[in-house]
Length: 286
View (spheres, rainbow, N blue to C red):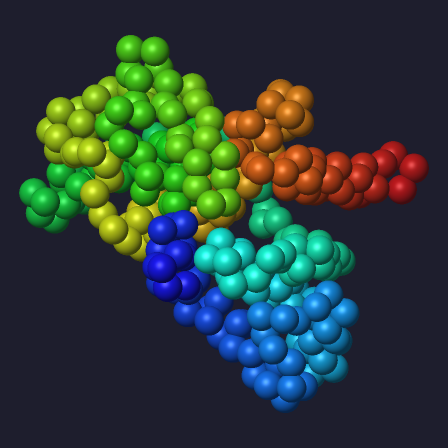
């Protein structure tokens, strides 16, 4: 099995594969310049490569991405028996930069976004096709607004994952998220039922191959009605921040599909930072 076939089997996109190839080629070129066999590189030599990248002015976050790509390559070498251990897994680089979280939307704003989009007047749809596709788009927007799904997760949804009688939906795992079962809101049930009956999608709930592009178009349409929308990431962030106000952090980790509790903690820390700013601004002793 080739390295590309290995990555295709593990669900990496064509774009990810191109980026990974670029990262791996940097290591290969460095090994050639140092007269080192790539398959025989040791831990200290790998650290020397990282130092050389820093000397070239490569930022820590970019180096982390490089190492992740190289780790995948060494996983492949390990699987096909070329090497006996993946020494790259021992390398841990701390990313000191804080993840920037966009300005969040309130639960009421999220509700308004969904309702205004769902109740868009028929005359707004210039063709019959646009009118029909709007039914699909309402279902997709609902999954963003209420369940906080990503485009990668909506792309993996199948008809068998929808349990309308129970008011639930199963979200399969992706490379970046864990599987989970989430509750559907009452006002999602009828649009989903209508969409399935009329479109009869099978096996995937949404048949478009370019799920992220489709969601971008939906967000662009919704933004005309609700200018406060930035992008789908902002919507997901807002959903998670809202969950944290009524659920414990472990529950939110499950609902968000986070593989690490640290990912969930970032949102809670942001919420506490925002609260501190508000207290500083409105404190009566100011």
